[in-house]
Image (tube, rainbow, N blue to C red; front, side):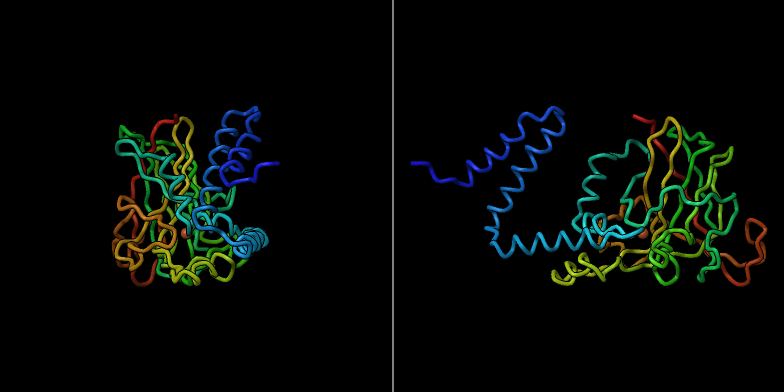
Length: 289
Ligand SMILES: [Fe+2]
């Protein structure tokens, strides 16, 4: 008589089925994935109906990815997985700037902008002068670094949420640091926004009584030869959601105070009527591994 299959020997059999994997890292990942996934299913005693619901849910997540919309990154973000991956891979050493999530709204190779440019492209909002510098751990400027900047508009939306093709870029640009390692540009003050909640990730938040808000922030991705690339945000101090970010991305070292200025002598030769804000920050990159 054949022995009945048990959850124990199914797990062992499934793991063993991958044991001839030539790539040792893939083997390590598959062995652990099967063990944890089976353990999870056994732990919650998943019903057939719940299994079907999970399959249908992940199918919806996949179908929701269209053009620049990336529902899987969003799902990873709200589950906290993106920040665990970040923590494992970017243990900031010394005074180097801490990293945080890339998020679902990054666009590869954004359009280039000149120093002092206004990336708002006509978007409404309080003008904000961004004055940053990219340094190495010794405090020396890093010239020629690529700095991608992206943020939401006054209504809390990214350009790619208004134009899924990603061709109409606004509040997004690529700069190159000058000899002093600086990047300076005009933008508008970012606002707290809700992550897209009209899809399966939004349904998950609603079903679990979670809010979809992220505190106001600007994204930066900095790449320089010989240095570890940095993906991070700068958060605006005082925001109501700094302690409750829907994607767990806040780190205290990334919270900045915006300073208040009057318009007469605005930087970059720009005439600003009324008040504007200024954001200053020094990014410090570690050496490449
Ligand atoms: Fe964002």
